Image (cartoon, rainbow, N blue to C red; front, side, top):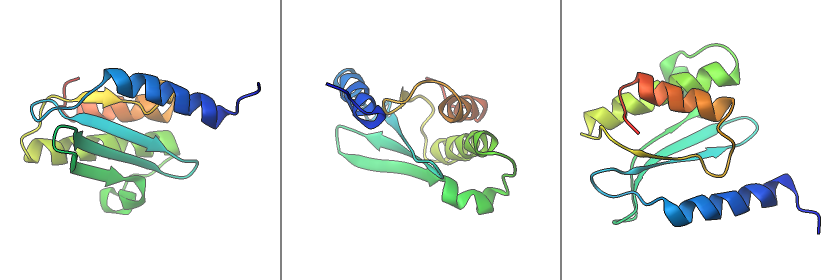
Length: 118
């Protein structure tokens, strides 16, 4: 059976989500990437609530310029700042079934540069 890229990503995502859980002390960072935008949330899985979120659509607020990878890094730094304002310093990174490469890697490095530990 031939699977599409989306089906392969969904399989990887389910496999990773079975192992990763976010708690109140160390919430999970959930990532969704489309062709145009990247959506990032800090989620407490025990309560089922989103604590902090950020979207590339809000890049006008950050004045991030450049290609999508550079913007993802800027969004990571912005989300890290928001998370630290709410008292979150340590997180679990859920890459959402995407490969740790390109925009996902830039986002993670931006989060680390912003001060989050994972």
